[in-house]
Amino acid sequence: MVNGLLQTPTSGSSDGYKDYSGFYYGGVTSLDYSSIAVGGGSYTATDYRYFTMKITNVLDDTTKFRIIINGSSNFSAYNDSDHTLIAKITNTGSSDTSNWLDCAAARNVAQDLDYSSSDGITVASVSGDGVSTATTRYCYCPQVTGGGSVIYVRIGLRNNSNKKFTHISVSNGW
Image 1 (cartoon, one colour):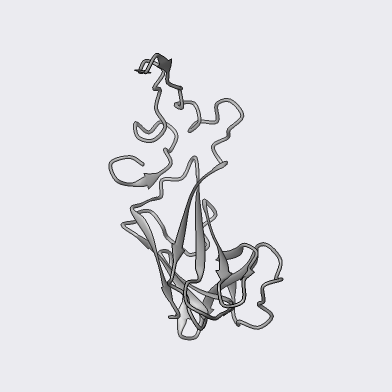
Image 2 (tube, one colour; image 1 turned 90 degrees about the horizontal axis):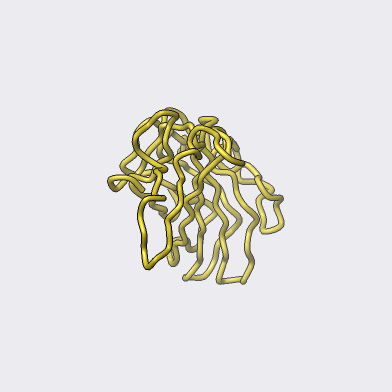
């Protein structure tokens, strides 16, 4: 987080990963993160950095949900290649947990979605009532019943991406 924005630095940026090796906390030298952005060490510019959040009590009696990427800049399409957006749902009504659902890849109908659907199954709606955009994803999901469901949302930004955002929100249905 830099100045309230979740972001990764672009090559040559003054924001993002910095060299903290000159700082001491309780006698421990901090680390130098500055080479991550330009592919230093075992990281490359096209590797991802992730932000994962857990949201409870939002989804109930639905096969659809909406994710909004708030306070964002430089997002141009729902399927930009320099970010990922995935979700996992635990249905407290049945105690089932989905595999990771790909919210950055197109799906035209909700058929064939269940809790045994494979990891990475595409769920972003691109037609009809919910057309996914750069910052709003209309997503299908397996049937959720019972209050208190849990959804994990994970967004990954490439180290060389200039995308930024403040937070993510999730809502039931469309």
